[in-house]
Length: 207
Image (cartoon, rainbow, N blue to C red; front, side, top):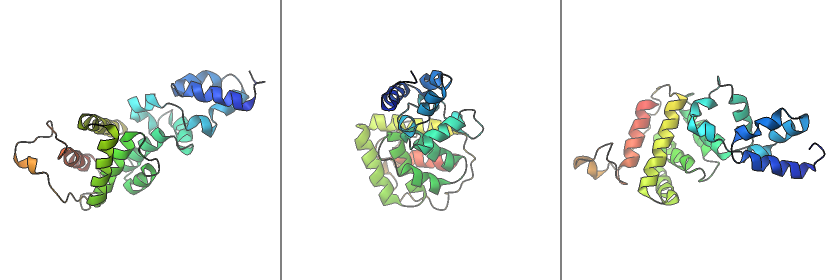
């Protein structure tokens, strides 16, 4: 297959990787030609990172998969950028760098949009954070889905392993506290008005 036109071979590798990066494993040991294809930015920017999304611990610097993940990050793979932004904020205490990174990738995946809103709030910009979260809820289509995505973000934070440096205690600023806090609303019974409040409080406790 080394005699294939490069662009055709690149298209094949891209299509294979869109299912899962593990499907590219066979290509790595086939030849130098296919090894070069696998690490092409065009492939890595679109490769599925489902195993990393299932277990975000795989992105940490001591992971044997970090080398491959880093190449995906360099290729600006949206899911890699999203996960790395969480690692920078929760693990390294570099939330500002994480916010800059996640701010570059738009609204996909939706987890990135929620993360952008969360970190923006932690730096004290309440108005911008609420605007981002409104866009996030509109993007995912329902409050139920918004809550599910936000919960996944926190699962990823826990898998990465937050260091609990409490770096945003002085900058977090929730200007308009939800009224439903006074009427029996709980963290396990969220509504659209208060769910962002509860998630931001959880972030403060974890990171």
